[in-house]
Image 1: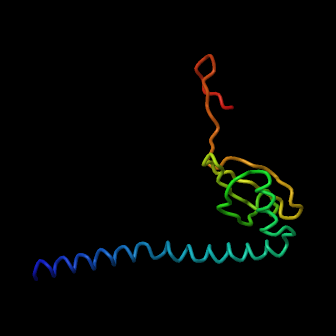
Image 2: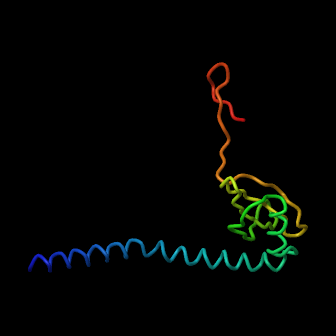
Image 3: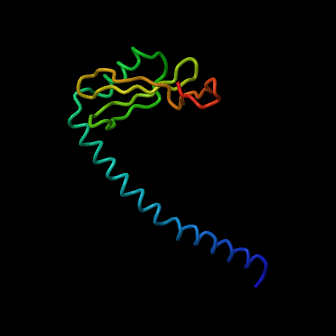
Length: 126
């Protein structure tokens, strides 16, 4: 067998191995995606607030550009999760009740609580 033939055979074996071992991961993702879609359809049927209303409410509270809005389930209720990039390049995430249109909370996405040391050198969270 020539060097080119050996390289081609090796490449085919490599690609085949990748497909065999990653196949189950692909099939698992498809089933979950269908479940998420079905859940989203069910939530949309019960939501009284539209995506347009949720975005408008979010933009009244936080100035910036909306980059994502989706219907989600949190704490046993349906909420609109709206993400906005502000002028300071921070991404703010706002939860809006899908039944009443009330703002539930607003937080900076990816923000972590700062840890400080107390006088004895122990970690203390804000």
